Amino acid sequence: MEFLVGTRFNFLGHRRAAFILSAVLIIAGAISLIVQGGPRLGIDFEGGTLVQVRFEKPIDVQEIRDSLADIGMADAEIQRFGENREAIIRAQQREEGEDLTGVILEALNEANPDNRADVRRQEQVGPTVGRELRAKATNAILIALVLILAYISIRFEFKFAVGAVAALVHDVAITLGLFSMTGREISLPVVAAFLTIVGYSLNDTIVIYDRIRENRRKLYGKSFTDIVNTSLNESLSRTVVTSLTTLVVVLCIFLFGGEVIKDFSFALLVGVVVGTYSSLYVASPLVVEWQVHGEARKRRRHRK
Image (cartoon, rainbow, N blue to C red; front, top):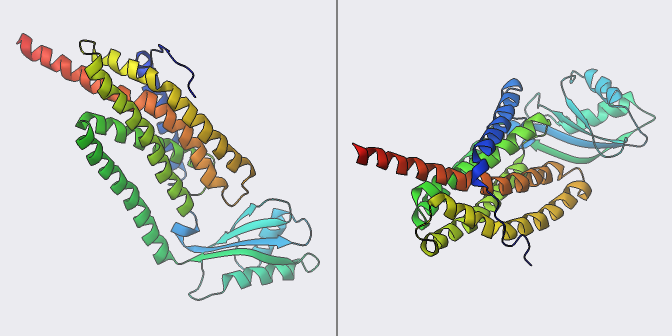
């Protein structure tokens, strides 16, 4: 199915405004990360215990907090989960080998004997394992970007590779910033979502790059800017159809998939939108900027 056929949108004419918009979003996210002391890391990376409890009757978060404060866990994080009878409690391990889940459950039931709780889910990660997972997740993203840079440099040109990698860093940076601004946690599933975003955005960018390469032969004699603009318009139908169908699925997962995969689906939701935008307004425009400045330098050398 094709629509938006024969469009002549001047994507590159608005590239400076797009660069400014991207810079504003990235800077806003960076400020949020600095103010909060970095991203909010989940149990996977920080180490500690996560317990999801369900009470017989609705209970207020403050009642749970008071119950835990009585056993010296006033700094535990408590988050409402689903209905008013469920909550997620995150706490740091206090002693090696301590059954923190049992301690939390006992404290809640002693403080609320008429509204007993039971454990629905528990996760426990030691601080050493958390640090290892954090290092491996960071390495996975960096290695992926380096391999992508090498692959696109071989398949196209180095300037195309730089544009693609810059777009991918742009996508991850904006998504990470939005996670910080909305107070969401970075967990292993979210890192998997980031890598999915990288793959999705890259696929879209490579399709556009292929069209640019074809049009450089077909439209010989036209300026590089016109060739890229034509290629973006010719790829627009495919880009929009792919993005909309993916967006509908991810939006359904976000709305109806439940709290457990909420952060994962949120990352994908943001990634699809930002990845589509970056394919049109970041990756290819950066290649054009590189080409235009390179041609300008050559002209200046010839004049001398």
